[in-house]
Image 1 (cartoon, rainbow, N blue to C red):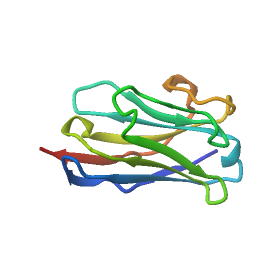
Image 2: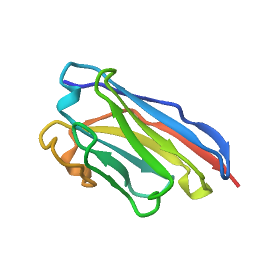
Image 3: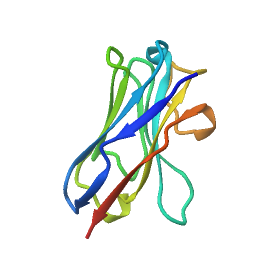
Length: 126
């Protein structure tokens, strides 16, 4: 069983930066692939970024490529999402997720992830 807790959300202005963190419980964190997803009001869950177990493989949604960076620290059981040049369309609840089955590759497929955090709200004002 893995528990994930996101933090770092908040209200920012267009063009600002924000870094989200996800803390994971359990000793197996370093064997999990990790992902970030988001859901805006009235919209479906959307892939944002993912990395494999050691961070050597990553994947980004087209909407955030060049602006967001995913990273992980296996020694601290954390994964982070650095978000730069934030836009109002980035407003959403951001979720951290863990894939305990296929750790060698990053994936945008939400169905691969079997553990999810509660989410943290990010609001970008125009």
